[in-house]
Amino acid sequence: MRMIAALFIAFISPDIIYAQVRVKDITDVAGAHPNQLFGFGLVVGLDGTGSRSTFTQQVAVEMLQRLGTTTQIFSQLPAESVIRSTSISAVMVTAELSPYSRKGSRIDVTVSAIDDTRSLQGGILILTPLRGVDGEVYAIAQGPVSVGGFSIAGQAASVQKNHLNVGRIPAGGIVEKEALGDIIKHGKLTLLLKTPDFNTARNICNVINKKYPACSIPIDAGAVTIFIPRNRLNEPINFIAEIGQLTISPDNAAKVVINERTGTVVAGEHVTISPVAISHGNLYLGISERPIISQPTSFATGQTAIVPRTQIGAVEQQARFVALPPTTTVGDVARALNALGVSPRDIIAIFQALKQAGALHAEIIVM
Image (cartoon, one colour):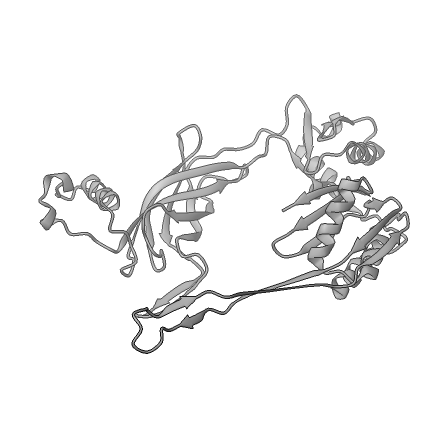
């Protein structure tokens, strides 16, 4: 815990140094958004880890029929003559199409099993069309599936690493139709802030107008409109690139991000607390089960029975009542909590209690 608090303090000095970031790192250009693609396909070549469901087998039959192979539908065959393959799996294929992807370029795809397949390891995705929300085919996907894990099983034990029902095919999709973004309209473009903030939007306009006078205005906390100067209309790409390289100091709201699963606490530079007193004590609870076997005496008619016995112990450590002064930086907050000698999970509880008491002036985000 003390190491965590020390790191907490090391990164935040009393004299706050505001970071300079590029405009391109905190904004997106309106109209240049990616498009989600999806498709339904079949993975083959699995080593006995595929599905035996009728649904998957029927999908395989229909695919063979489309390829011109003569076969019959399962419903037309006697149950005893149906051969269920364990080397195939029905999957959903998803991908993200960049607004700058051109026809013939490659994209990564993700393959996810939708049947009772145990593993996609070693499988190959058969040619699968990927469609957008408009139903049009924008890409096709095919190739070997990489799951990044393994599964080894014996008669009495098994070992598995990572999730085996989802895999990726790097560069497994080929773009067939472009979905280019329209970023310039009527000689202007709009920047969208990734973290909306009125002051940050104003700072962006100030730095742009300093280089290109009177060409940008803030629309709201999340958008800035830029009018391309007349002498740059013939080279808009160069103009946008120059805007992206400008640097500003973003102003973000005070936030405390908490991950209760890992005990991680991250606080922003503007987090402060009002004068407050904290009493903190740890309660240790120990519960153990020690069942007792009760046997009847000789020549008795009773039966041997297991009698449960539960032992509970509770120890509460000495509580400390510490008064915290008003603070101005997150480093002071860390020092104050470090003085209590609390664990990361206790820090989470203290932050939540401070928020309820109205002493913590920040938004708490629980992951």
